[in-house]
Image 1 (cartoon, helix red, strand yellow):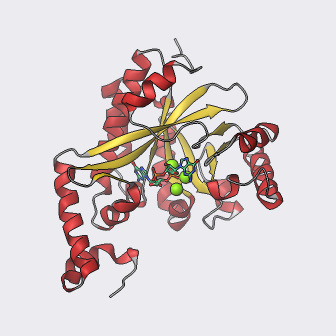
Image 2 (cartoon, rainbow, N blue to C red; image 1 turned 30 degrees about the vertical axis):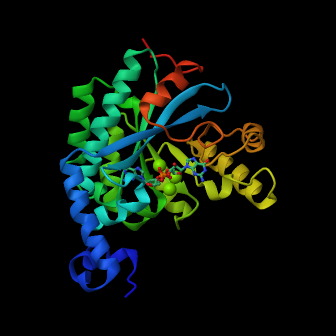
Image 3 (tube, rainbow, N blue to C red; image 1 turned 135 degrees about the vertical axis):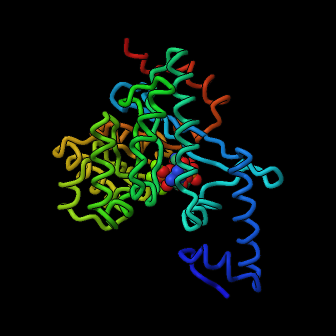
Length: 283
Ligand code: C2E
Ligand code: MG
Ligand code: MG
Ligand code: MG
């Protein structure tokens, strides 16, 4: 029987008599084992300052390096993990790896910020800010070098509770971004009240803004909205030069996308970074 993604855990427990259920049960058990065996890896996608052309940061994107199946992308395990209550552990592992990498890059003179994605359950965990502070101190990474991303959908679902956690993180000097902006259902009132620094406009609006007038209108007015709220606008999903040129014309702040680089393992990204203009470490 077909059940929705939202019942991931229930399917895993009850669904042993159908194929989907059996597959998910295997996956959840395998995934737990994978977590124990430290099989999560991070790929990093560069973020470019449109005005200067410098690479200023990276976004950390998690993959599961499955011993037999190879790299499994977030679509293949994150919603299951969230329903199984594993996001706390995942986020802590991701933070460790991302901050360790950020420290290494900084030691090599590359003053990159690193953005980490948070899930809904992370915002309900009152111990998250302390864990983040502890990890920053252990790796010697300044809080301003860490950016945290929360999707618009998650922010809106429980704005009051989310705001409390986000306020604490922001008070530490960490930058916060609304991810996939434009795909949720946030009202301007929430946007007005939320303690965030950056809007990441979803790639659905960015991808064809060079040819589609409606996308263009949305991008332009969202840049203006962000700037009027003292936020930066980050465009995701920049796949060609024409889009990048438009975004530059429209005063967009940062861009990310396949046109610049796909997310890559740090061993591959580091040489790429060393050949480009990268923000130096502030002394
Ligand atoms: P996201 O945070 O919005 O990340 C952007 C996604 O778009 C990434 O997919 C990235 O590979 C992809 N992308 C980047 N540039 C382009 C482009 O030019 N064109 C297209 N078509 N796609 C592009 P990915 O890595 O599969 O991640 C999917 C989602 O999984 C992320 O969306 C994020 O919501 C979630 N995710 C990834 N890593 C983590 C993590 O460590 N923790 C949490 N909680 N969520 C994560
Ligand atoms: Mg993101
Ligand atoms: Mg996004
Ligand atoms: Mg997304």
